[in-house]
Image (cartoon, rainbow, N blue to C red; front, side, top):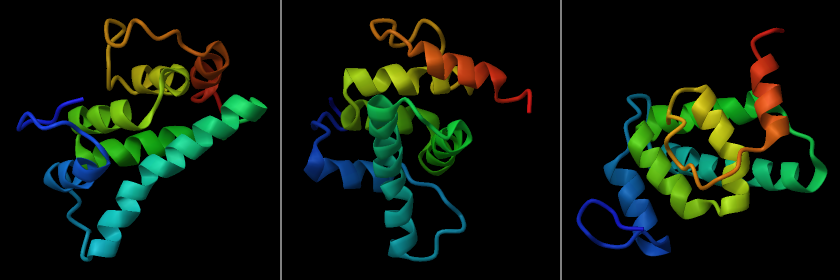
Length: 127
């Protein structure tokens, strides 16, 4: 995966990429920035837990996606998710991104959406 300057997105360049694509007017400290970056780890943990247990707090899941895209913009969030998640994890995340209109049905078509997550997302606004 390559970042805008042509260098590869990896563990070393991830924080640089995140910092250059970061926008949070309420961020006053470096600690605030690292808390926002940690949301990628929280999302990944939540997805892994779902894959093991088939249980998920769907509102928290959607909240993490929204917070990430608010702090890092949608395109940069997608690029960082591409780096952080494997294809199995993407099957869980893709329906959430579709639901929020962050991607279209033509994006990431090689990934099969998780049907249960799709169903939960359809019902999220009913309550």
